Length: 86
Image (spheres, rainbow, N blue to C red):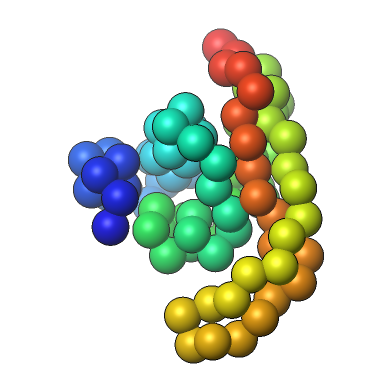
């Protein structure tokens, strides 16, 4: 598990999820599968939307990736933080 996921709030509130996601994005990009697995964020797209509404500039790119069971998923979002908001 990434240090960011270990050291951030473990809560399931939207606030805690946004904080974990923003911390990760400040260190580098994250994809939907990793956000679910490493950060325990079941709806990363919603948290990204909320961060954008708070002024964070986050861009997304669609990628294909293979999950832990060896299945390939197409159209997975990969998110990048270009600058922080509030």
